[in-house]
Structure formats: structure tokens, C-alpha cells
Length: 269
Image 1 (cartoon, rainbow, N blue to C red):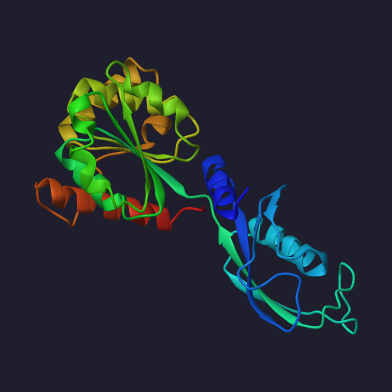
Image 2 (cartoon, rainbow, N blue to C red; image 1 turned 60 degrees about the horizontal axis):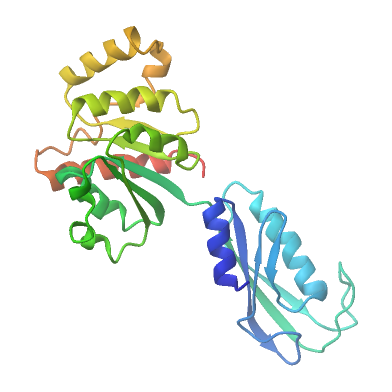
């Protein structure tokens, strides 16, 4: 498996890892500069030459995987028999510098309702390195032509057409997914709020709408849904930053995106 495929596999599994690259080589070494190794919690893919260099790099990579906020780092190795090594002697005669780059689990965001605001929000969030799920019961909102504005997305964009029960998608979303509910139908919004509160692996839950809408929803979630106040309080509404006003879809989207990015900054990865 190539290192690119290995990185993609870790991302798909939502597992952290470390990309290890031979950055510089002077003299003789087992691998040339550019050789790569991908380290996961229990697996590795590729090689930077084996021996002490690779073993030490794997040990350090696994320490980084367990760290709260790992940062890229460089490691220097001298390949001669005068150096005390942790995993045996390598006496090729050269020196090697190895770069270790953390591959964190990317965040996931699900937008339920890809109308005017939802699409503008998707355009903003698509510039972030995350898994972006776009869900709508209306096929016309998810056409290739309409979503062409996301072609250059940094995010991995996943579309879900759910003509009957959009809330069924919730169970299949990655753990920790931040959910934003903004469909065209208040009944659909209400069903999604109820289902989201019954889906424990989700991250934050946000609902677009007025205070009057929330009063009705809150009562319904309590009396019909059987949710207690603590559970209902998981839903944030209104969403967006209060000091960013305006009713234009693009303005609302900027406000909601800024609020979500602020949430990212206050949570663990």
C-alpha cells in the first residue's frame, strides 16, 4: 500500500497517525530523502529503511499519537558504530534527519438542509480540512450542477439524498460529528432535533430559527419526545454569532461558520 493510500485509510477509519519522512541524508543511508512511513496505533505502512532509525521513529510516532496536541518534529540520527542506539547498530556511515508529522482525526460536520443558507455555509466550510456531509430530502438541492461551487473543496464532501427520513443518516455519521439543522420544513427540523438527541455519538447540535420556533420545539421535545431539560439544552439555537447581523444567506452562513469554528477552538480533537 502506498503512503497516500495509508493516510487515506486512517482518515476513513477516523484514526490518528503520523507521517514519517526522511527529510535529509548526508553520506550513506538505507533510504534516500523522501522515503515515507505511515504509523498508526497498531499498524505501519511503508519504510524509511528499517533498523534503529525506523524503530525509534515508530516509538516516537506512537507517543505523538497518544499526545493531546502533537506538533511536527525533526529527529536526527548518526549511522555509525560509535552511537549508542536504542534498537541496535546502524553503521552505514551517514546521517539522517527524519520529519514526523501528526495526522489528526479530522472533524466532521453535517448540514441538514442545503437550501440558500445551507449551500452558502457549505461553500465556507468546504475550505476547511474536515468531512462535510450535506443532507437534503430534495434531490434538486444536491445536483452536480448546483454543487459545482464545491469542486475545489479542501473538505471531503459527502452528499446524502434522503427523500423519506433524513434523520436516518444520523446513525451513520462519524463519532463527534457537529450537526447543523436548517431544512426547508419545520416538521423535518423537529424530527431531526428529536432523533439527534437520541443519537449519543454526535458532537454539537445546532438549529437555525427564531425564538418562537424554539419555544414550540422545546415543548414538543419535552412532552412528546420525553427528553429532559438537560438533554434539550444540548441543542443550540439560535446558531451564529449574535454580533453579526443581517438576513442575507451569505451573511447568516458567515455567522454560523464563525460560531462553529469558535466551537472547534474550545474542544479537544
